[in-house]
Length: 353
Ligand code: IPM
Ligand code: MN
Image (cartoon, rainbow, N blue to C red):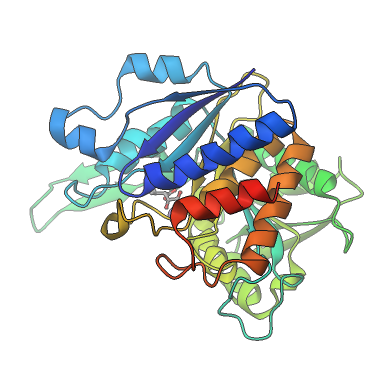
């Protein structure tokens, strides 16, 4: 039984997640995959009312699920940092979801801001380390609020953290088996971060020996931003650190058509790991309840969930149906301009499974 914890969250989160669940239920019947869905009321709205983000009991009960489907967490009345730290990052760290997987694929019919680039040119994957770097919350203030104030924010890299992510990325590249050639590019900043990214690069070179069939390359992050825009077709799989991964996946996200389609997986690849899949779009408060938001990213996230759980055929069927709907039905990927309502997009994907 595939047990899925559903966190709709804030704003349009519940609307897009409802479509993802609809598609999962549909494919579950077609492919005979028993699934159980349980809703968890975890969101900024609740935090504002009760002061509680998530309880220990909730953490411990969600831990037993193989997967979490997350809509969006974010509320305009909650100051920045609170929900991010106490919910999203908390779940990533608590469940040791050390891989942040971000496929970047331009689907048929979807517009990219890159002139003359076609779906075959924009098709790569970013593997972002998800538990270290500037995200550990290590640092502090000294003499806060005075003219002598000092603030530190430390980037932490461990051998174990670098190695497990890099090894997974090599394995993923091998499995992806790109017909254009298997290639893993490490993205860092070894010319300036001469300790942390030295460890990163040495680890990469050592693990590479285990994967002689995968071609390797290294880009500094600034150059990577340039190449990604100029020659996105160069990339197959990129592996990078948490902070750089955060930044380059927003750039990549816009190349693939924006937040309406981009999805991510926060993955704990260990046997009993609990992984979390999410559309990248955020809570989009101004569209809440209007049935106009694009659920494609959330449906993409659902396909990733199935893929990671080993249901490759089911995931492929969803991906094909999505490509048919973006290529032949939708007018645009922008909220309110799709030519269909949110729930109609979910229905269209189901009809084309
Ligand atoms: C992301 C987001 C998060 C991050 C924020 C919301 C904390 O930007 O998933 O990319 O920085 O990781
Ligand atoms: Mn981000």
